[in-house]
Length: 477
Figure (tube, rainbow, N blue to C red):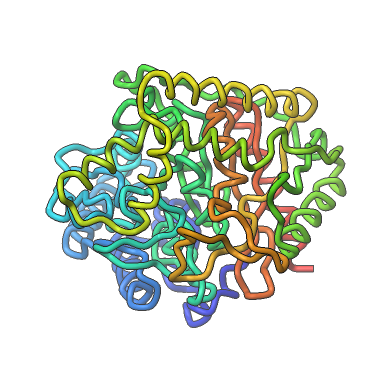
């Protein structure tokens, strides 16, 4: 997608050091055409401008980031450059970086400073990336809009009357406005893919266990850490560093080797909706156009039905989240902490199921049933093509606590937003990536989601890069 179409980016000079993609920045550093100091200075200046308009950041570490940029410059001069030397990295407020605030977007934790660095991003920092900023999230990541009592709401850079979705909304908005070249997100129900879709950038939910997490992934098989970027190439560069074995992970895995198959030789299962929900006309238009583009490259595209209706899917989601997340949020409320209406609504929703062994087993049983349904589709296809979001983006300021959005003239379920993303958290072995596909009538990006068989992350990234080329070509015609 041409991010220059975004109003916030129209005055950005293409020669500005922060205006490129991360892969190009790495190459420019290696050639000596770009210095870490110039890049960080430009990124911080851009971040300050963007922050005043759409609020993607919770913290910007100007002094420390510049100090680290000077150190990166010295390493390059000495021939000791690391793979991401001097590249600015934005880290989500839910993810710990030693010595930086770690509030989880909550007033209750506003003074907490992390003492350790999360294993998902430690490889990026060890590779020379500089964690220059922290990005906004809803409290505890418990919502699909990016708003909290501590830092406020992040607005969509394409149209500030709309939200970024969530919960990695700050990360997506920063990427879309060239205020960060790389960003990390988390994804337990679509929290990385949904804001990437709403802001016109790329986000990958890896297969579970491929990217390590803290606490160890077996405690939350729905949760994932993943890379976000402006291009598939940037996301792949991050993923190849993040996806490393970690001794602390009981459920750690490595991705399967790539097959080398190209997009034109694939069998693609197209899913255009789900019983119980309407799909926005603009989203469906761009989804079907993407399918036609892939077919034009030689792919065999056939339409299939999603195996469950939305009611059953959300019941399975309640079971899964009630077993894992409800006790944490409830403990904060019981301790007298001030929490947002979003957090209270989340706790009330998942508290309808009890976090005990019976419900944990029931949650996994339901997930296994869904996995069989998805598995049956992937037994006949190499790739699933489907929407990322039901509609381009929700309106800003609306938390959809007791009502849903209006889509094609009909009010939807208030739990609508996770419908097309959470299936691949419940069936957490499946990697899923979102790509920008077009623009809606309100000027908000639309997106498509590609899903591969479990642990086919490298194949998925290869196919996504080719799909990105098709979608870019279509958008310029």
